[in-house]
Image (tube, rainbow, N blue to C red; front, side, top):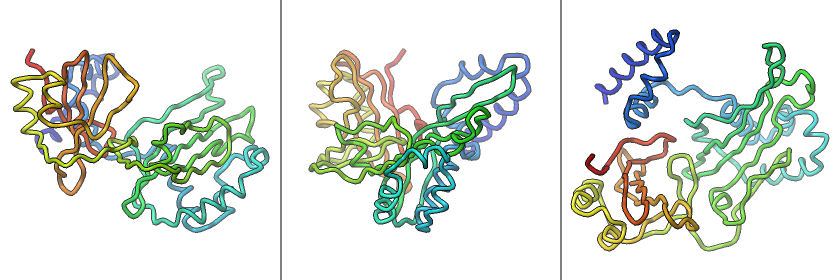
Length: 292
């Protein structure tokens, strides 16, 4: 890890030097994905505008401070959302905190408008994973930072606070309308888990499989049928409706007290890559790939 960190720092300094002459992008493209991810992970975490907004919102909810919550929302939203107070009361009753984690390594979406080179409108949106007392939640934030034409839209435009089970429900769709939204656990007997920064339906399987066992087996046979015959069905299927290709996850032993997952890419009945995943948005390395 120290070696990778030093490489990352050295490369980062080099890229700063060459960025002005247009070589930085080509240099990054030439690096393996696992090296890029380790370089990113070595850098200090810089909260995005979306993350900072989510942190302030949850602090106000924990404090049961109605005015502090409303101060974060765009004035126009507070006028138009007739259910705001009722939803906020439900959220106050549901979420007591404390907020142990509220961060994302993912880059939020950005929308902006330029007028003669000047930014006249800029907004951000994205999901932020939240952890409180070991329980996973997810907070979607759409927030406007600048809007010279419609200042009443500055602030949070839409925020959805969602339990993990609600986000995994087949009928769940992220709301499109502005306002405050809260989704508690829906009915249904299913388990969930967090991989990277996403929520999935989790199927428990009575087994223990290590990354070393997987890699050794795949050196001899990388067919999906042979793999499932040896290790059993996956704990997580990325999209049950896909046919020609899919992504599957197998639970691995924890490392440093944190869950680890093997992510298998399967195309046309063959496993094409296996990576190590945790709670971060970025992969933690390649476990296996076919010999070139």
